[in-house]
Amino acid sequence: MPLAHSALRTLGQLLLVLLPLSQVEAEALSVERQTQLQHLLAQDCGSCHGLRMTGGLGPALTRQALANKPREALIATVTHGRPGTAMPPWNALLNEPDIAWLVDRLLEGYPTP
Ligand code: HEC
Image (cartoon, rainbow, N blue to C red; front, side):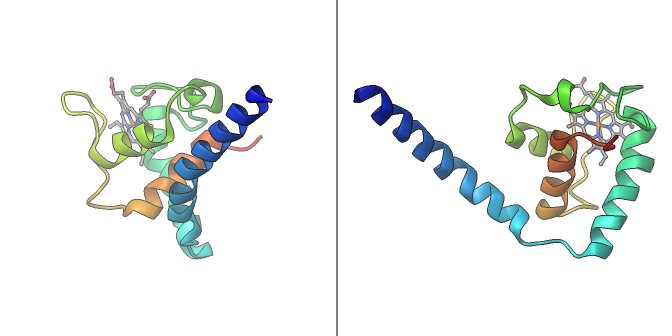
């Protein structure tokens, strides 16, 4: 069954890609840190992207808007900003697990209805 075999191989490759990334998140953030980040998302990110992430000065960051964007690309944008645009780099304020956590909230859909 070549089809099932190649599907399995694709799944294996996907897991290889996803595992190290999920480990970034697995360095579980404290509840306190999560609360701070949630606040930052609404207040700071929300000031440009809209309180409900439906867009403003910056583009919409809803689950639908981000559906086709690779997680790593979004993490890179938040980390380094987009030079020449209003999107600032956040790496002075946030570490990698923080940024991964924020991007995962956006990919899951934030704010949750
Ligand atoms: C001062 C305004 C401003 C703030 C604050 C801001 N952003 Fe942005 N953001 C932008 C703009 C403008 C863009 C679009 C840049 C471009 O044209 O490529 C952007 C782009 C992005 C993108 C890429 C979206 C895509 O479709 O590729 C992500 C993800 C993002 N911002 C997340 C965040 C997060 C998370 C925060 C808070 C930690 C944040 N932004 C804070 C202005 C802002």
